Length: 125
Image (cartoon, rainbow, N blue to C red; front, side, top):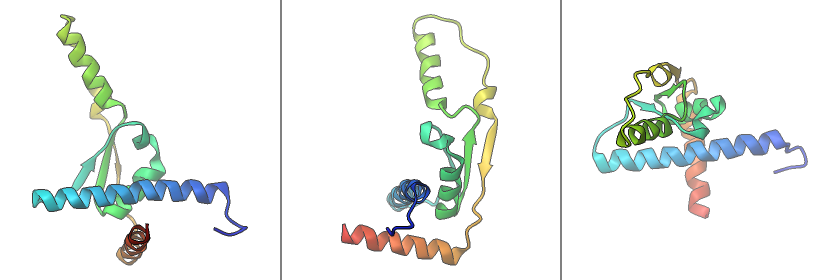
């Protein structure tokens, strides 16, 4: 940080840290499963942030699909709870069918540089 660091720089750093932690998580999951991920579907509060989703797509190197209704997990739980108490099923499903796609745009060299810097920072922690 310098005297020129602004709130925007700190906010961007926080988003990049979230994305980089998700890269570590997905990398571990792929190693454990012996499979590679070619796209990712996301939901939840943080997924509503377009910049975060683009940073994740760039750092993961995969397309990310986000439903229009970002709280689709909560919606699904609510629908199941309603069925559990005997309410009729809700036929609507379009709110989770419409997706926004985030495609990686970062140059591979920049991606590799950011991942190396992240690994070095984690190693020092």
